[in-house]
Amino acid sequence: MLAGEVPALTRAGGGCLPFQAALETLSSASAFGSVAGRGALGMPRTGTTTVGPPCRCKQVKDSSVKRGYFQKSLVLVSRLPFVRLFQALLSLIAPEYFDKLAPCLEAVCNEIDQWPAPMPGQTLNLPVMGVVLQVHVPSRVDKPEYSPPKQCSHENLLPAPVVLTSVHELDLFRCFQPVLTHVQTLWELMLLGEPLVVLAPSPAMSSEIVLALISCLQPLKFCCDYRPYFTIHDSEFKEFTTRTQAPPNVVLGVTNPFFIKTLQHWPHILRVGEPKMSGDLPKQVKLKKPSRLKTLDTKPGLYTAYSAHLHRDKALLKRLLKGLQKKRPWDTQTALLRRHLLELTQSFIIPLEHYMASLMPLQKNITPWKDDFLRSLEHAGPQLTCILKGDWLGLYRRFFKSPHFDGWYRQRHKEMAQKLEALHLEAICEAQNIETWMKDKSEVEVVDLVLKLREKLVQAQGHQLPVKEATLQRAQLYIETVIGSLPKDLQAVLCPS
Image (cartoon, rainbow, N blue to C red):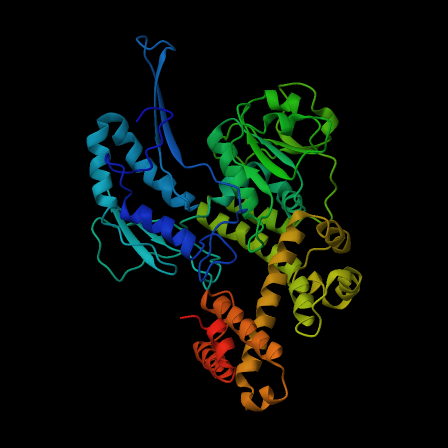
């Protein structure tokens, strides 16, 4: 398929493969990658951001072509961010496709057509081109893996399956290898939703670093915009490069050195160089002032005036660098780094969660809560679960002004409101003698009860309220009882035939 086409691994007739269709159906039905998903877990994302599809490209010199090169691209399109799986799939398919073209792709489509539909919590064996990819579809009930998962041995598969440690998570250690000394600073910048530019030598590298950055906040949902690969041809180019207004809360991945000049006014720029394959320790980029961004040949480094609130975890850095020297498996290195970032985020969020829970169900309006919360940090702050020292109070103050606090607050407020609605519905349904209650009530009050019960019933049936099936049945019975006590004309209005 020529560059610019979007094949989406579909048949020539345009029909979508069952596995792909199942992915898309699952994406909308159980919201993989969304906090609201029913039993599913995925990469953080915003409501509008689309992660660029995985692709493989080939460029060969060809004097018969006007531009001197013949180019091909193979693109896999899905609404689910299963980056690790799709990268592995394309690495198998693309080389064969570039040599054999359509017949190869048709054979691959026939194999994928037989794949089982992905369901949260299942481990799948996916055969393609003589290889079996073994993946675990993540679920919200899964516990974070601190070490690489072991191969399932319940099936004697030949050939032995290629076990992917994650279906959606990138190799975090490989992405952060050149910036290990600044991982916590970058974590803080992501937590606060700060504008950041990642300048890398290739689209693949810029995309992976951006996706790694936004994933380091798990389990907190990333609520800002992000562009894994941004170019001068994007429609927001003028908006992002203007100096007349502050940069938006977005993480940009770029490769063109021209952006160093056009984005000098951005507060944080991370430049990484070409990865080195030698066995030596990676050269860590330095922390530099933005004022040193003057020429297009700027050296690798993190250019920012931001001062981290938390002290660097030197023990973790020593452990990771020692593991690199001893050639510890990269999956293990990634597990160590991911565990550290997960515990850091949880230590930060748990006090907020506890404080929010303490407001249930006695107080709905929590707008003026910040000062009370900050005072509670002395005896119930992150120091209970995290050994890192630093200005936690200052970090919380800045977090309260960030898009991520707004996103977290809105989600928790929604969950609290749903819980209160569910408790109210259960209280009504558990009340005795509904007929006695109706005796001294006006028709307006009784009709109002019917309308409210119906509204709650619709919400509960749409899985928006956490209530039991028995409660739903009791609510329906109450509605019928109440309507039956009303005059015939009102019954006709409430229950039109």
